[in-house]
Length: 266
Image (cartoon, rainbow, N blue to C red):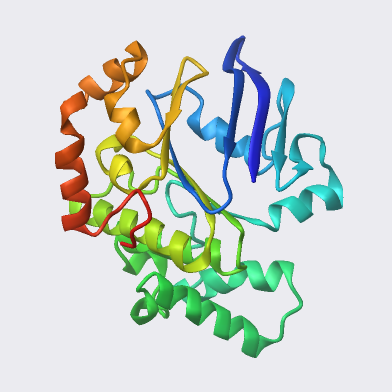
């Protein structure tokens, strides 16, 4: 579904991405983790064509997005929903109007169909009751959910999440991660989630990828990721007090909290 072939991105005199190659399978949730400044958000921007590699190629559903321009690029972007860190809602529009906006700007659907799809998206993220409120009237967690509703309203095949739980309390962060999993299973989306919360990522992701110094250090299923003997992985997990023997507890927590990185629905 998504493929990076030896991608290099040079910014400010350094390689933010340095020979990055990986694939994201159709329908999976890939958690993209790593230290700050290691190229996670830059990776997302390459998927949606907001950045172009200095060298290498990026493919989305068979199309080379790194070489796409004009209508070709718009066609690729039409398959992708993007949830920005802050939700990126327009303050002068209601929650419902924010969710409807992509349909108004990019489709010729009749008003009744726009309203139906927006309502379905709002219900999918448990936000129907706040539809007529403005962004200033809702919480940070609700803002993230509204951003997610807007990302899925066009029936996107791929959803990119840039730090969806950043700045949220643990309970609200858990609710957002449950939604990531629910949306993935309900709509069959392919999801790439940039996150610093490796503990929860191990619970909801199908695979975890670690970026460090612009390079891919590991890509593996959560159980194998936790058990990895690679120094970069061990250092990253140890910094969050996760040891190779913790997988059993993590798995139990995933089940009790309604998160399941291997196919369950939150």
